[in-house]
Length: 66
Image (tube, rainbow, N blue to C red; front, side, top):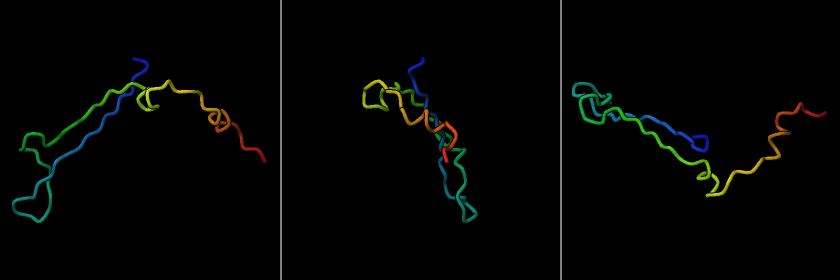
């Protein structure tokens, strides 16, 4: 899928420790560790249009001019 962008992130849920004044990872509860994966078309980032060439990128990789 050359025109797809994969965005993955993880997050955890915390709950109070029963004996200590701190938060601990919720391993017992369902959904204590979660991961999300989104698959989006590249055009989504450009408002539904095809991305165009960026003329600045060719200059950004050239050596600095005095």
